[in-house]
Amino acid sequence: MAKVQHPVYTTKYKPHAYKTMKAAQWMGPKNVQLGTVPKPMVTAPKDAIVHITHCTICGSDLHMYNPDLKTAMEKGLILGHEAIGIVDEVGKSVQTLIPGDRVIILPVIACGECFYCTREEYSLCDRTNPSEEMEQLYGHRLSGMFGYSKLTGGYPGNQAEWCRVPNADLVCVKAPTDLPAQKLLGLCDVTPSAWHGNELAEVRKGDVVGVWGCGAVGLSVQRLALFRGAKKVYGIDKDPQRLALAKGYGSVPVDVATHKDVADFILEVEPNGLDRAIEASGFRSTNSISHTIMRGIFAEGDSGDTISSIIKATRKGGNIALIGDFFFKTNQFPIGALMEKAITLRGGQLYAQKYFPYLLEITARGEYDPSFMFTYEDDFENIASDYAKFNSHEIPGGLKVCLVTAFGRTL
Image (tube, rainbow, N blue to C red; front, side, top):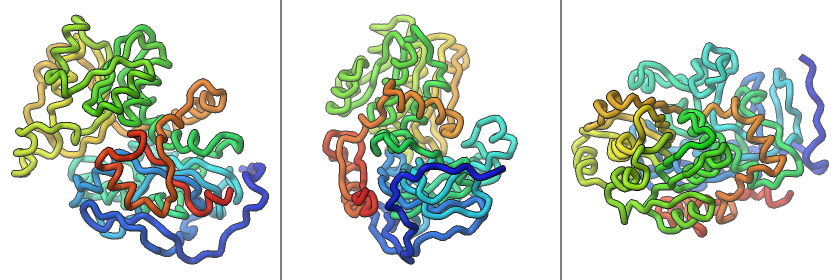
């Protein structure tokens, strides 16, 4: 295949000869430090080295920060899986990218050739994750991911000034030169994850939808559900600021602090129950005493509290999607209600490469704007303090921070 020539994002761009870079490294529980590490190099023919301009912190990064994945972490791992930048260098087998191209780095590292990739189920890729621990836990390995523990391959992340991108033709998406950085950064992970939730739940025109979580992903799920034609969307959370945002975007806010039994409340106002329900908060959203005790004695890793509420609130024959991260096991799972109500339950990580052409298209056409999630901008060098702010819900505006690298500030 002949290489495709593209116009460069900036004519001033020249590959940089730096030997080291700054990167956000996991150094222990609640300890992220900005370290100086070797700049990555091309190590395989399909690699690209991307000079990062903008990156962000994901809610799922907090599983490592707190740490819920402590046993799968390695001191010094570079974190992050949401970033955009400029191609600095490519391997000899890269066909669609050249130095100077502006790109979005997708979080899922897929091969493009295995059984699952040929079915466009990229996060189930057979070939990019060497983790034996994951295989022992789940019976199979899933795809590799950037900056997300040894469970997903131990790949260095892109909360850094440069990133090595394996299988770059598939894992990088060439970005329009005229779209603002925050729109592109919002497309990296959050928007395709939210679309994945809608796809798994089979949200369609006229549906009544419930979304547990009003963070960046949950709000994106809600906005995209309405975009797909949902009649009504409930946004469930306990953060007043995020609930206000949900209301502003057209959802019906449901405050967990006010309605202790959310399922009972939803069934009062929607007697048939929800057509589709999407969990976008993750197991850490619960504060129940029983879960705290069971985690303390290692009898439970994840919590079934939220999913129990979702199953109760969903109508007979309805659909449920899990896209908040669950890793281990839970007790008191309502398997009887799930089975007897004929509910379809699906989950999984996003199929980013599958959804991207359409999501980029509606963003470029102005039909959807993913930049809403960035309520704060900061210099990349402040990432350690921004992790602490994000973990304690103290990011200004309540959602995500857009971090701009020194290189990004020059463009």
